[in-house]
Image (cartoon, rainbow, N blue to C red; front, side, top):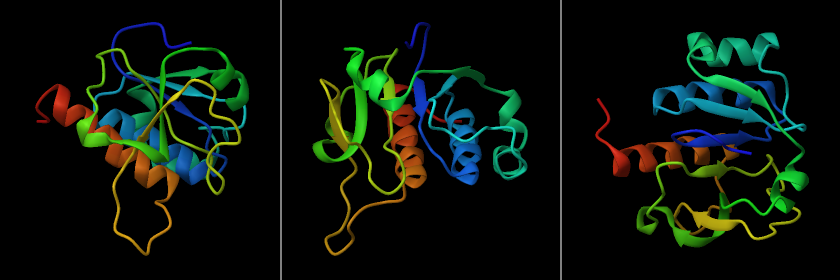
Length: 148
């Protein structure tokens, strides 16, 4: 699913603005490959293209399976979730596979994916899925190499 060097990000987002913002964040933090899952809005819709800006030309965009099919694939995938190890304590491999949840409900099934959480203050239920992805991408990039 995520063959190749470097971090691969899977995008299940249904909101075109979140899809575009995810592509932009991925490019900003050195991700070369973004896999749009079957549930994802098209990155070429006007709202998505505006949010992505020129970053849409800086990453390889691939079509992927559905979210459930990906989770059932058995691949070693790190999923952003409300549970799991705090992201700053996880040593991500160079060729990690990263998966945020769908806006609203996150994940119906988790399979053998590895939960990773972004610690947040009490009283706030969760982060916006795209915001969580951006924070995770920053943290992974920071740990793997200096950000210019």
